[in-house]
Image (cartoon, rainbow, N blue to C red; front, side, top):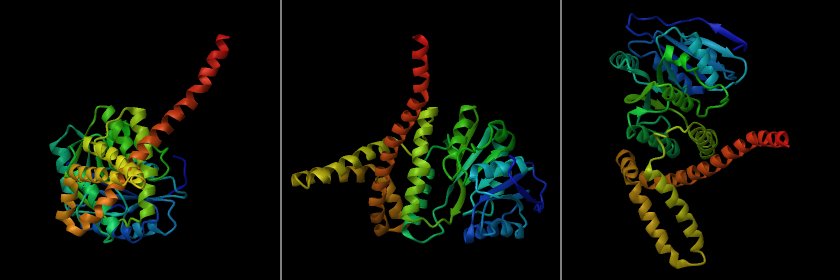
Length: 356
């Protein structure tokens, strides 16, 4: 870590607890959401032993805002991605537990108390992750849909987790350094937290999804931003990670989800074919009913949270999610094996020349 870093040592007051908890926040041009994040942390009781903000080359003076709130600030002169920023924050932390949160979330007042109690009561746990709450900060439909779907996914998942989560995840400091921290080859917000979770699991450490550890997500999603984040920065590298490490996907690809991907692609092909053979619309209707049945718990959740019309608007977006998710699996698999081929091809050629 030889980057130019400026330190501002303005630590918050510590409290006499059995476990000290350091809050670490990477930020790049955090804007008003970051201000809400910091302001919200001031009301947490008991407070963390310190709040460390790593300014990842921001140009909107987010670092200065963090300093004004009394945080310990580390400044990177260029943007290197949240993986490196979190690692730098961890190196500067003094707490027994490292609590990572994103700059666009707000926490609940009792988060420190809850996190500490879990690690004291469950000494076998190396790390825990939380969940977005069911009241996203942005009112537009896409932001509500995306964050509520994330909430549903976490709230219905197995508590024994195989991934970490940087938006709200806590880990014992010694364990974090034992496995090497976040992989800094991820230069943008991607799957650096998921990859860390897989390494923790492979090393024999336990991670728990704590469904009562909640944060509110303030991000304003746009269609283009959502697709870029979901497809290019998450789905594609996640597929390659699963193929590379044989890792388990414990949140996103259950049997019903896999069957839904097949059904969505079949429905798409049938609808195209129905332009020449209208009788296929009966099959399209049957496939649509199948998709509705497979995902009825999801749509019931949205109906209960936001009403009938909101749930109705969710359906095409949810099916589109299966469409680009399936495409990511195909393209990610092709890209992975192509990279493997390019890696092994020179060795095969050299071996052939040697044998001659």
